[in-house]
Length: 162
Length: 263
Image 1 (cartoon, one colour):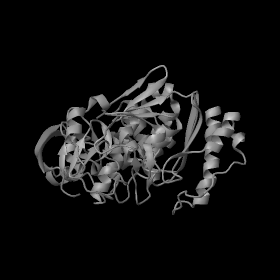
Image 2 (cartoon, chains in turn red, purple):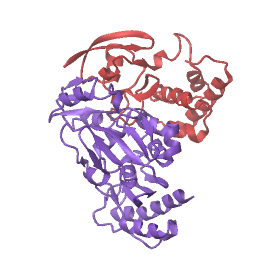
Image 3 (spheres, rainbow over the protein chains, first blue to last red):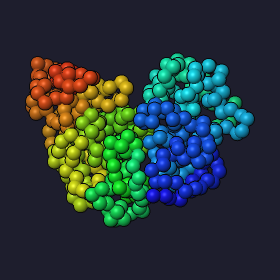
Image 4 (cartoon, helix red, strand yellow):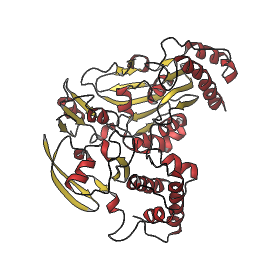
């Protein structure tokens, strides 16, 4: 069953015809060519596919594209203006918070949403907040450091919130 | 996923009219969509409930907390009203799955699914809540009928859940570290209907423990449960723990929950 989908992705109005069973992640990657969002496990466990829908971090592999009709979607590509880095992205680079990098887009999207809810998290709160994101390199230590570092920077007001 | 139809009706009446034996209501989709993706399940039509504002939100009356079926776990977790009126429920909601699951998953979806290791069934049974549907009110005792099964008829829709406010309550689970589902979870509540103890994760379906309830009725203290054991017959045994292990864990977690509620 094909349906017409209209929504906003990274600030731009997008539309298209999608099969009802198309997952949001496949719409983003396949039709919009926004391949920064990754498919890690395809069983709703790993969080590599996390995007924001109406400001909430969600697994885009566990949502139909048509469920995003009328919604505001942000992917890793939309986090900062072209050529720039969001403070979270900058912190991941500075703290070497990635090894293979496959989980990174999902980690960053979850972490940005985490700080929106709690701008000054403890280390334990960061770890709990990242429970839905798996790093198979097991590089959690630097990921947590990066989120805490980004939180400090963003509270300091040196950077523009997205 | 097999081919299917999708609708997002704007009213409960339209949602009910779209339902048939092969369709499914789509709430948060945190269980339904993965099972469809894996082709463990096949539905001809999904009826997305997300546009039904009547099913959203939290309301507190002097005697009850009423939660709309489409209220997401994160909203229960964060709600100042829930934290004030029934903090044990806010804590329970904040421990479901992970933040991404809590952003989508709903109380109505969780109850309709009735996973044997889900958290909300323990709250509904332990607090003596009432599940309201488009056509009736169902008591907690009657709602949960077995593993992944409920008293809901085909096409019947949960609209809201009403929790009578307890004098005190606590929920604690020993969680599977990977899935965050309860290996054993216990809701202990001191209610107008008496002391109630409900256990999830341990058996094929949430259940009460009358021997614990009687002991706690005499004295609401963790010590009151010392020496009491739940038989392991019929409990779940799997790679995460044997039936005997779960039986033992019920006592441990129940005592800790009582201590939390009593403090």
